[in-house]
Image 1 (tube, one colour):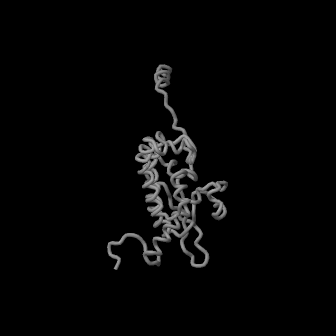
Image 2 (image 1 turned 90 degrees about the vertical axis):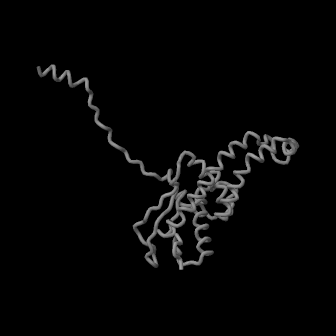
Image 3 (image 1 turned 180 degrees about the vertical axis):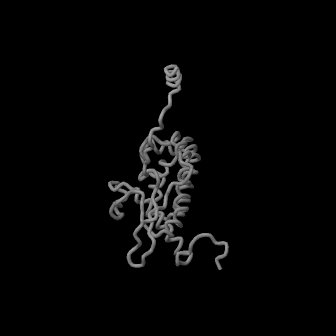
Length: 203
């Protein structure tokens, strides 16, 4: 029985469900990648629209909490990353200056400051299972939502069903880039200085 078990089964066993949600979340985050970045040359061609994937409505609603959780974890780690920059090395890795920094007290302070960010990366890697997706999440996606308290994604139902089984399709995307801006009409202004002048003219 699945009494008091939240979430949809999606016609899969628990291991398959977790793998499906991990892959969907990673696919959504990987759409934010830079196609010219050398780290992502082994991936497939760039997506048509950044920050958006199309799937069924039920899968989109299930993967949304996972994506929001990962963005929140990454966003909370930004404070530790910025605090560790004060003690970070100024020389390139492997040089004599870097080795000297590695043996100094600055490294101990840097290590203590950066440890929450490292723990957050490991937690997101555990949730997503993709190192490239974790890198994009921490470098591209999380800094965008520093001042946003939540609601980093939206699910929009599509009008046309899926060919073959007529499944209801939907797209899940990150908010902020593809938002529609509604232009509001300017409110009329009523100057109080005109009313006494009109009253005096009437007298």
